[in-house]
Image (cartoon, rainbow, N blue to C red; front, side, top):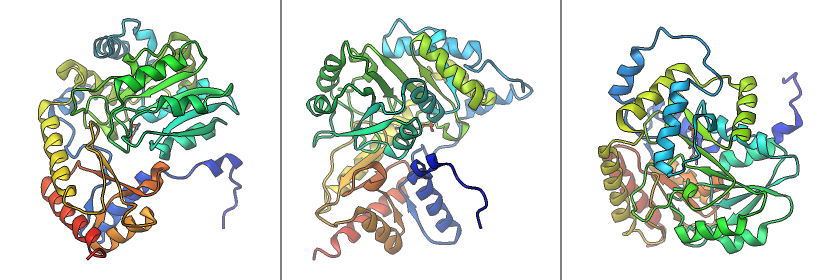
Length: 387
Ligand code: PLP
């Protein structure tokens, strides 16, 4: 029996639905079930050899670093980000290295959001973490649907602005849809927010995994109150190393640093060296081979899903997810995904995890044999009740 009373705030917090599902799938595999895990939010490859080698040379170092990170890392992130975004205001003082994007996001929200402040969340979104983090700050989530094409919808955003709106989170390429938001929609949103006190939190964790030439980096669209979140998890295959960064104007950067000084302290030191190697060796871009593989796998999914009646989808422009509409097949995407897992061993994430029932997220970062087999099983499962 539990003896300790939990704080009221825990009502807002459950374990991340996607991480919990991933853990369940791994458990099933350990029990001997054949599972085709298409829930992963991370590249399938191991830590790149050059990163292992670079960090191996630094293992004797064990001391705290400055909370915001090693000076040489902040220097390197700032120079790299100036070049990547074309934003010349980015200096080391604007950069905080964080233990992954998540603590950076939480600290940024804590630094900006007062209780009762509203945060606009275009959905589908990574609500699985955005919502609890906003609510832990006492903030109020205001969901605004994306367009049918999964683009940002400035008109819908305009309708939801109020004098309590304090921030908007924009994530492109987007989890769960894989969509990239159009330049026109981003610029119109920037125009809409100009002169207001609304901060734009650009979650750019997938901005280096892009397959479509029309991609516009959110921070280049003309937003004047910008907090950039980015990191090495997704594009450098370093999810478990926990290393990311926040870029913000100096006062906000200082506030985030003060918060983190009491929560995480500095980001893990070996991971800071890993990040430095990723910038030094390959300019913090994923290897071309990674993009080629992901593009091919994206195409495999497209070719397979095209054949399945009842599943509707859009080709993702980035990240490594398809978010397909299964409303013609079921009234409950949660149950559909559960049955799919039970009957075929294929694991997808139901749209409920992203505030959008009626959909399922398929992650195509797995080996191609698994992907091919899983796609066949999805087709058989989707079509079995239709014949
Ligand atoms: N932002 C989005 C949109 C994500 O999908 C994820 C991970 O799934 C993160 C942030 C978290 O990144 P990190 O693992 O660096 O904390």
